[in-house]
Amino acid sequence: MKRSTLFLATIALLLLSPFRSLTSGPGTMAPESTLTERLAEAVNVYLDGEFDSGLAITDELLSGKNLAAGDSVAILEVKSIITYAKGQKYKREAYGYLQDISKIGHCMMSFPREMWPSELRDKWYEISKSKNQLVCANETGPGTKTIAIMEFDNFSTGKYKEALGDLSKGLADFFEYDFSKFSGVKIVERDKLDYLLREAKLAEEGKIDPATAVRVGKMLGAQMMVFGSITQLDGKNARMVVRVVNVETSEIMTTADKEGKPDFVEMEKELVKDVAGKLNLALSKEAGTAIEESATSDMDAARLYSLGLKYMDEYQYEKAYDYFRKAYEKDNSFAEAKRKMEIYKPLVS
Image (cartoon, rainbow, N blue to C red; front, side, top):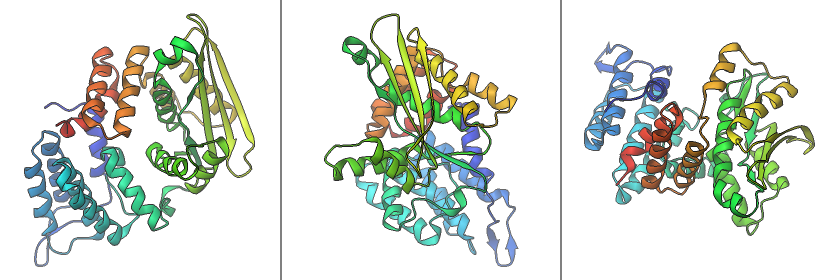
């Protein structure tokens, strides 16, 4: 199966991690590329549905002598993902590898977290919360602005509310991606935020208000939180509003809104630049181009992608894959839809 360039770049994040070399024999160090190349091979056969072949590679690597802690963590991450994909009866084993990782070094994760199935990520957050390590000290640097982005509200009425469906979920995802392109910005992982919000929702009997969201954002080390909403009342007019809240004081730092024809994908890009300008965030020429070329300009593709996110969050991987595939078929330039389609394909029953 041919992988997209963007998807292979995601795997490359693993290859760029600061691994130390494996010991291939007493006193003999293997080339540093050995581990990363073999792990990439394990990931590729997993993506092709060859789970046992992938696990054989991880077992071989784990049997190596004098493994550095970071090496062990990386191997166990891949092993957990592949084991989870084998089905329901393997979940406990997959979770066990996460526990092993936490014991070796809870904040030593190196594999791109978005490659993890959503249920596996939630299990990791559960472990992290139990250890009071939802946020690691190495996640932010000096002067970094940490921002959490809430799922947008849909205030549309009647048939427009139904027609837009879960688009607000996709718009928050687009906003997160675009904002991550600004230098000096760290985005709180959406699924980590969602995990804590679900817990808060259960504890507070279904009531999630901005104050609760801000409290959760603070738990995750966010300095600012972005709240957004979309509204469509008729076939020609729509509005999108974004406000940024200071997590420490709960005060609104800035707001931005856009009115016009109901093209929320285009509105999102304009509001990203508007809000970033008001927050004095630096945008390079390359980052500006990335924002312009990100996501999709097709509203139907955006709606399909949003449904994929919905089912992804609900662990309904077959449906998630199907909607990501439909989004990509609707717009063949929609790289993120293709990437998520490839990530979730191995989990389709």
